[in-house]
Length: 216
Image (cartoon, rainbow, N blue to C red; front, side, top):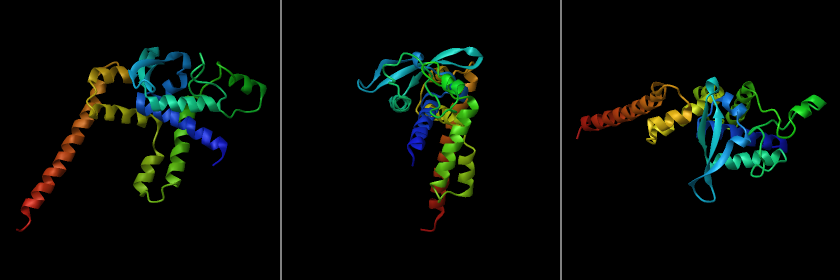
């Protein structure tokens, strides 16, 4: 793997962690900035949970948690950009490393005012990653390949919501993190978890019935 490919994977990791650990939408990923981030007093002393100010739908601001893993991924990405994440005061959280060699392009992607990825750029990033993951897993079924190929940044947001509901994160907390205006929208994830519980229970009961029906 080339150095450029390694660096691109590190960008992908940041995007997926911010989507999967903080529930960010692809549009939100493109406007998040360093000046909106700060460490909190929660978590381990050497690996605290950070908070990030997000500009969401209808330009509504909210604060979301950022996992220690995502912060480490950001540090690596900023190092690739020739910047120190911890001492930087501003700039887009995620920014392209490779730009056209024109004066305008270089100006647009240089320093704190560097332009971030576009929403379509986030989609392309995930498609790029899924394509390479599929190529590296030859034992996948056709259905699994199709599911991976169709993965979008939003899928990781849904994963966050479902996993948080499964871990009994209070519904009002989950609503605030995801930025839903209506609590009813957030309950979709709770309902999905309830359905999973019932589905697994039904499998257990079916197995028990089958075992009881076997000749002794």
